[in-house]
Image (tube, rainbow, N blue to C red; front, side, top):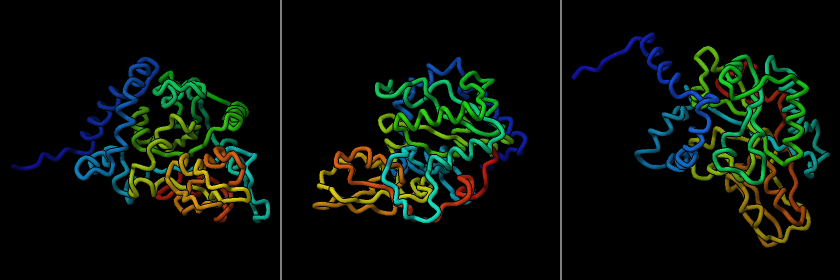
Length: 296
């Protein structure tokens, strides 16, 4: 039986038709968050023999050469024990502030989809992520975000830091599709996701996504490290979203898989974990992206 080949124009119309029906808006927000348990379950299937490849394809993370979905993790905590002796150290929150200041357009989501989906009790549901770039104007017209000045976006970031949230600078093809961004807008956005450890889909599911997906989520140059006072309690390892910590008798070993999120240091009652700069820091967070550079 001969395969039916669709023209590029037909494929685009077909894709836009689906997108118009499923894109996130203020009107369908409450209905969409009811699907959170299903969406939370899906990443756990990414390593399954049959279902996994299909889900990775649908999530646009199946081919690193043509699918550029990726994210970079930055702790916003300015009180962690950074090694001040490291040359040219740039605090992670400084990198996020810089990309906000250099952006052409900014919006703040009215609600956090993850926190709303899990009915978070520890962090405010109406504290949403920051999106940058001209492509994100569509989120305002959809009623799910509000336009923000540079000062407003920086103030929002500072509040996230004070709450102990973790920043992930993300560019996700599947998310752009679900938000209603068209082909031209896809590369003209960047998400600064402000994540709580209790609800974030990524922080909750990284361990089960497998290496094919995990290679797309990285630190921008920091790694947790043991300091004096470690008692080997294991609280840090239990809280690590990627299983990068091995606990010894009075110290820990941290693998290269560490995202530099700082959640382990937050959990350490002995304050025996700090953050070391282990790679040279690039000029801009946008310089870390492979395959292309987001336009913000």
